[in-house]
Structure formats: structure tokens, C-alpha cells
Length: 260
Image (cartoon, rainbow, N blue to C red; front, top):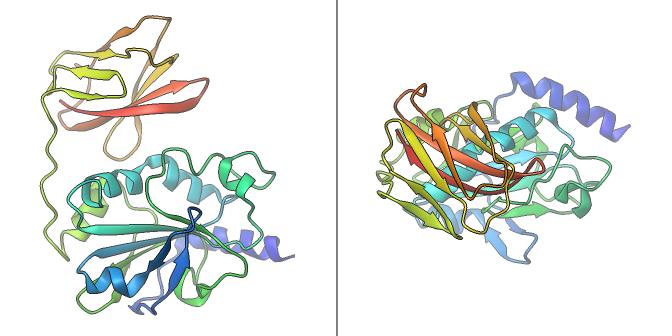
């Protein structure tokens, strides 16, 4: 019965808006046994985003698959300009670690691989649903550090829309893209690119390259048939920032950014 009610809440969440007002303080422990305190972050001047989702929730999975929060964290969290914090709060107390890993019976997929920000899965729940997901999942609360106010629910925002919304609170640092992006043996060149993007996979095993635009939508696909150097024709793409998702058997094994 409880899951049925939550499922209805998730459907209602398609019309959801956050419970705006002062965010109550909380301290939670993530899957790595690290504690996180909301007001410590806010008092340090960090913008905070709390994503209240459930592993079985379709709209939540769509948000997760867009990589908008992941990209925000990598660009503007501790790995980047260190201006914000993001917390994933699994808001169904019956969710198991296997569900989060994508191997349980109540999940849309793997929520942990490639997620750089803290993930909290606790029972009983310590966050109040009336505040953090009053109308269902997902609810993505944006919290302003100056007065600790929840100012927006960004559940259906693209990456660019999230950046624009946060820029109304603070001025986010410019994200620079190096001439060559290289890590874990994978190299993209030239960057910026006009016609053909070379993807040197090094020793990484992959069977497909998927190009995603800034909103997380698929812009192009390229099959990899054993070659270590793939060439992507990016001429049909509009100018902008893109992500190459490197995949093997449908699972992402890495990703790299580029600019056209």
C-alpha cells in the first residue's frame, strides 16, 4: 500500500513544486558513512541542491539520465569552482542498496555509477516529505545560502536552465574546456572542433559513443567496432557544449566533454 501511495505521489510530482520557505536544518549520513549538515554548507556560502527521488520513479530516472546534476556538481561543486553542493536523498525507506546499484527488484537502473555527489539511503527517513517532496518525486530543491530559503524546484530543468537559475543567486564561475581533454587513457581532439572529432579510446573497451547535448538529449551515436581511434562527424551539430558518453554493452564506462 505504501509503495502504491508513493507511486501516485510520483505521478503527481509531474506537477510538483517545492515547499518554498526556510529550509529546516538536517544532518544525514551518506553511503560512504560521511555526515553532511545542511546549515554547515549554507553558512559557508554554498548553494545547496537536494534531489529527493526514488529508485523506482520514472521521472526521477529521466532526470538522473540527463546528467544535469552530475554536470553541475563537476563544474561548480568541489571538483570545479566549489560554489555549490548537491545531495541525492533516496526518499523511499524500503529502497535497498541493490536497488541503488540497479540490481534490485524495485529500480529503474544503476543510480550510483558515475554519480559524484553524496547519496543518502536511510531508514527511517529523517527528512520530512512535507518539506522536501510535498507533491511527489522528483523534487529538486534549490536553497539560497544568504537566507536559507528554498527558492525553486528544478525537477524538470535542463542543465542550462539550472545554471541560469543558480546565476540568479550567485555568479557561477566560467567553465573552461582545455584544448585537449585527457583522462584514463581517453583523449579527444581537436577541441574546439569544427568538423571531425577524434576520440582516442586508448585501452578503454567500448562498443558505442553517444553524443549528448547540454540538456542531456542524444545528439548523435557512433558504433565502435574494435578501433581505438574513432572519428565523429560533428558538422550537423549546432555550436555549443557536448558530452561524449563512452559505453560498453549499454553501460557508461566513461565520458568526456567537448566544444563545437
